[in-house]
Structures are given as C-alpha cells and as structure tokens.
Length: 489
Image 1 (tube, rainbow, N blue to C red):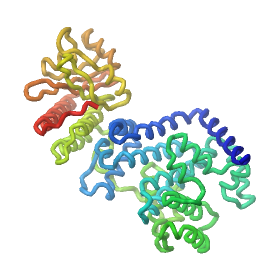
Image 2 (cartoon, one colour; image 1 turned 90 degrees about the vertical axis):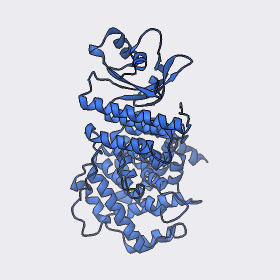
Image 3 (tube, one colour; image 1 turned 180 degrees about the vertical axis):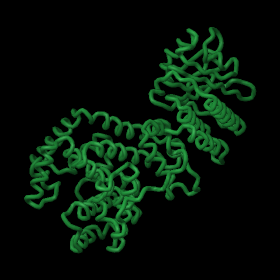
Image 4 (spheres, rainbow, N blue to C red; image 1 turned 30 degrees about the horizontal axis):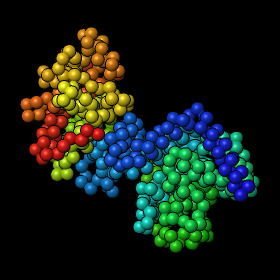
C-alpha cells in the first residue's frame, strides 16, 4: 500500500506542476468545456455546436467526418456544423472535439511532439478499426481512447523535457519500454499519469482504457492492442518480426478476432488515413517518413487529399452562403421537422454567412410587451441572452421600433444616433442588425446579429439577410400549421 500511495503522490505532484504551466490552462479549459456541454444530449446541443463553430480547425474536422461515406449516405455535402452535430450525435462530436484539441495543441509545440501526436493518431486509427471487428466496443469511443492512450508520455515530453531525456537514455541503455523506464525514474508509468489527467478532465472512460490489462473490457483491449501495434510497427529500430506479431495476436486472440492477413490491411489503411490527415494539415515529406513503415512499398509520395466541396473554406463567406441556406431550407421542409433545431441551423447560417460574432432568435412576450432572446450562437452569446430584453411600446428604442415598424434595422455605432449608440454599448456591439419576424400579420419576434467591428454589410449581404429572415418566418409558419410549439430553451 505504501508503494501505491507513493505513486499517487508523485502523480498528483506532476499534475499540479502541469496545471501551473503557462500554456496548459487554456487547453484544459477547452477540453473540460467539451465534456461539460455534452453531459446532457438535449440541453447542451446548441452549446456544443457553438463550441465547434468557434474553432476553425475543429469545424473542418467535424464536417469532414460528417461528409465521410460512413455517415453521409446521401452524397449531398453538409456544411452546417449544427446539422453535423445532429447527424453525428453529441457523443461522437464530443470525442472528435476532445481528441482534436489535444492533437492540435501539442503537435504545434516541437518536431518531437509532432511525431508523438502522429503516433497517437495512428493508435487512434488502429483502435477504431480493431473495435469495429467486434460488437462490444464502439469504434468512435475506441478512436478517442486511442488518441489519448499516449497522453502520459506527451505530458512528460512537453512539460518535463529533462526527465523525458533521461527516460530516452535509459531506454537505449537497458532496452526497456518507455513506460517501464518512466516507472523506474519517475515512480509511475506513463499510462498512470495519463489516466489521472483524463479523470481530471472528466473523461473516466478514457482513463480506464489506459490502465493495464487484467479484467479487460472490449474497449480497453482495442485501445491496448492499437497502442502495442503502433509500438512494434513504428517505434522499434527495425520493422516488426514475425515473432513480435505472433505474440501480439496471441495476447489478444480471445478478445479480438484478428488474423495476420487482416492485421496487415489494418496497418496499411490506418497509415494511409493518418497520411491524408497530416498532408491536409501541411505536413512535410520528412515528417511523414515514419508512416512508410506501415504503408505498401508502392506509396512513395504523399498524395494530396481530394479537393473539398465548395463552402468548406469558411474564409470565403459568400461561397458558403448558398450552401448554408440550402441546408436550412432542407431542414425546414423535411419530414422530421423540429423548429428548435431548425432555428439553430438558421442562426449558424446567419452567424457564419454574415459573418457576425453573435446571432440570437428572439420572441415577443405579449404580457410584458417586450421582446426577449431565446436561442443564441456565438462567443459570449449566452450572457447576451440574459441582457436582451427590450420594450416594444413606450419609449422608442431601435429594437422595439424594428418590430413595431416591421422593417429591418442595421446600426453602425460610429455613425448612429445617440439612442442607437446607447443600445450598441449596452449590447457590447460595434454594429448590429434586427430582422423582424412577421407571421400571420403580426411581429412575433426577431433575429438579432452583431459584430465587434464597425462595418456595414454590402448589398449582397443585405440580400442574404433577407433570405435568412424569410426562411425563419417560413419555419415558424410551418410549426404553427402543425401545432408545434417553439422551444424557448
């Protein structure tokens, strides 16, 4: 018991030290937010979509996944993150987000860490494919567990480079595995540190999959097999021997039905997928040389991935508008109509197509004679929901006036009237727009959007805003015809 207590104290001390490093809190907060917003599939659906939209790289990852053959059987390109979350499910997006954030953070630190993250991605692909061979482990869960399996080594390599260098020397001198050398020199194994950090982030399933085999689960078996396979293929001084492969197959033969032939195809397909992902991120040929061990001899040059459909480049806002509005229209006219989720997809189209920093859907409260925000997307929009309450009658204000006059309003604070400037200051916006929603002759609410820069939309942008406004009105009209009550959460 004393040895276990000592390991626990050592691990706790390392985690405290890592938490104090300058670059760690931001990563930790992002991963914990991903976990936090996905505890309840319904309540936090919009928050998860919002989190993905705020991260350009994560947006691309989610959209590439939802447009893969496995998920998108229709063949029609999906460019809405909100719709992607709907189709993929909250759990899958959570796993993609957590693994992407980890990878993106550490692979930018140094060439050594980039190689470790490349190997982590290979392990993730191995584990995903191995889990797919059975029925008890979910491939998506295996992917994220594989991605985090090497977390302990990554943390030591980045946050304690001197200790990591000592471990590397010990490995060369003794021929030990890295985890064994770490146990001798640090007092704990890499996976023990990784599991502790996963628990700290609120990911106990990931932490459990890192721990030693014994009373193993199917998920742990897929994760550990994938990790060991990566080690013998990519981390040895030479390609794996027949004896190494035979021992690995024998160790897991009860949990995973893998033959030698099947294993060869699995290694090749995983290496090809990681190569495609890394090439898309701008990796050099030198950085990809390691993958040649797992690829067929014919593969000598990195192949650029096929061009993505128009609209994936979100820096080209005009190019994305028609695609996003088409998706809103498809959802609004679809068989399985849900007004709440349709409005979220519409808010995303408004925010990204504007582009705007924040977008709100607001409803009139007849009893209070005021308009209140109900749904939101964008950084800081949750706080804005609480503050967005404006009277419609009484003293005139730009928000209430837009609903009374049933005419869109767009205000740029720098050139606005004093009362318009006061509203802009209250909302924390340099420019804002209000699109009244008129249904059956009555203004029932509005769409609000704003920017933190004082820019006026061009004529094409005003046309786009009008199309968004019309689609919102059509969706609400359908909900009323079908007697679907708009959700206010």
